[in-house]
Image (cartoon, rainbow, N blue to C red; front, side, top):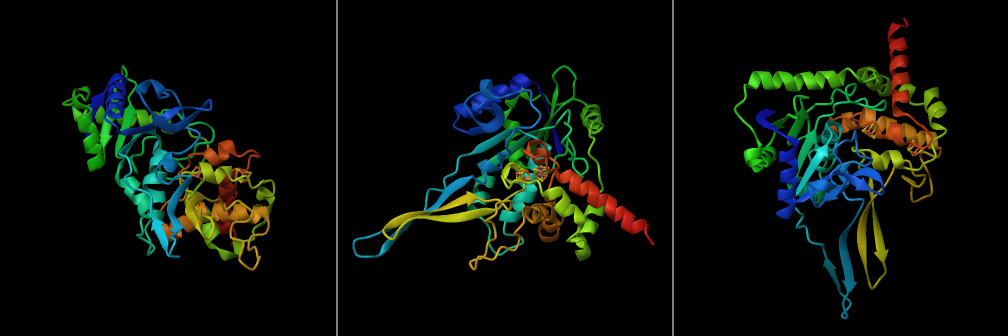
Length: 361
Ligand code: SF4
Ligand code: SF4
């Protein structure tokens, strides 16, 4: 990333007020239903300034929970008129995303919808993405559920961010780095709030030191290469750990809805023969009806098999199919599962089992 300069928090808040005044949609951590969540803000006053990770991810601003794809209406002559909603998506700045979410949404989720690997791209996602600038803020502390460093990322990793802002701890100083033309445009908008011309080596040193301090605080560690090797072996598909760890899952779907890389969706046709609409809605591989065949056959009849699918998706399938991380270690599914199903328990056990396989003659 290119070093753009430094700002003070007041400069950032002034830009938020300026952008919202110009009609730009600013999405930032804000209080919704008493929880810190990503949501649109009207002014900097509404932004939560001290937070670890918002409850939701910002994926819903690129891939909405529910959206109408088209409507149909029968004319008097019996023909149909089909209408698509406007795709005039607003210019959006996502402010205050964390590096785990930026990598998950800007790289992993995008790889699913880009059409690079499959014949079909999703224009609804891609057009929103083109109009969205992701301004991430490095973490200064993980909590006990975070594990981005194990996934090859980190609290100050720039992957997927257009702009990365890192506090150095020096008198409110924030280092601004840019990684794309959208990021350059954001830096220009900071105007006189952006201080340039400081010695680059010193600035980079202070910024790296802040990241290194945060990296020391992670406690969940395993080797993702070992986990992948374990899952690549078809003999391990029915390993005892899957039923043992997954039986308590209650199919609520929270882990998938909160996950920044989960992308499954369904189409619902609502209405009748005279008119109606097709709606795209989030779906979850944890729901018992997910993948039920038209014959009624359910290939994953037990809940632990559905969670095994989720684990495989994150640590094997995403990499095999998209050549990307399926999990960026944000820790939401660990933190918020109501019955404490912990994806890192699976990973740590797969890691250990693979190590044992490797040392056993
Ligand atoms: S693992 Fe937890 S959060 Fe995910 S579906 Fe099961 S009970 Fe819900
Ligand atoms: S699988 Fe869990 S920890 Fe990994 S990105 Fe998704 S919600 Fe975060």
